[in-house]
Each structure stands twice: as structure tokens, then as C-alpha cells.
Length: 175
Image (cartoon, rainbow, N blue to C red):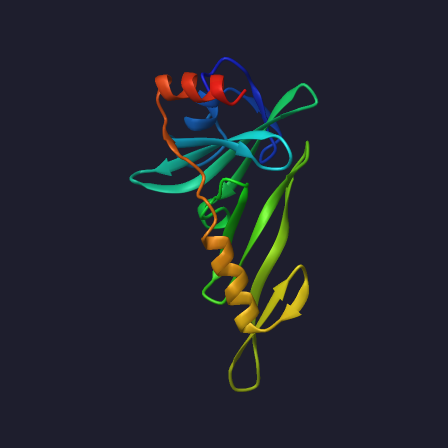
């Protein structure tokens, strides 16, 4: 996070320093600003999650994860990693009736979402049909709502302002 080590961006398959990633060295059509970060367990070990803003609004997250002697970066759209919890679970949304909760599985070439529960919509003959699932098993709307309320009630991830002091403090506490 201090621009001293390259990371491998799984999004565009390049090794980059953080500043090059943020300032769009021929990669994206925008410049990112890191506004906040958190350090937590995403898939059995620690990861750093950077909140990336474009203008005044957060639009993406970059998850930095060390494995196999390399730091890997995973770019995730804002709606793909909402409500991040201290246990590494999060919510995601693809629309009003298409949403769920999951946990990331981080691999050296990409990430995958281990979906814990979700709802999905489909168009019936005359109306919208919403189906609910927990652990890929169909459930009632009430069971799904209870499951999601439990998820929303979990302890939120602690976000820190992206500053030199906070980086040094949090990375020394959470090596």
C-alpha cells in the first residue's frame, strides 16, 4: 500500500505498483483514489481491501492478497462487495430482486464468490417471480429474510481513512 511492492492485477494480468494502478497507466479509463481500507480475513488468511473512489463516490474495491510469494489484486465493482463484514462475508446486488451474500475465494488468477444465500428473479407469464436460496437449496421468502437479517446484523468490517499513519498502525497490528 506504500507503493514499494508490485502486485499482480488479476483483472488485467499485469504486475503494477499501487500508484500506477491508481493513476491509470494505460489500464482503465479513469483515475482511482483510495479513500479507505480494511484488513480482515477473506478466505482463511488476511487480505487488505481498498475502497476506490472516482470523483466523490466509491465505485470499486481492490482486494490485495498475499499467496505463493506474490501479492495479487482483485478489482470488484462497488455493488459486488457491499456491506463487508468483519468475518469477510458481504452482500452483492445485480438488481432489486437479484441479490445475495457470499464470501470470496481468492485464487492466483481470479476470485470466485462462494454464494451463501441469494434471491433471483425471473419473468413469469404475467408477473415477476422471485426465488430464494440458502446454500443453493430453495427456501421460503421468510427463511431467506431471516438469513439476510442475520447477515446484516453481523459486525461490520472496520474501515480506516487511507493515511500513512493508519497504514503503518493497521499493518503492524494485522501482519
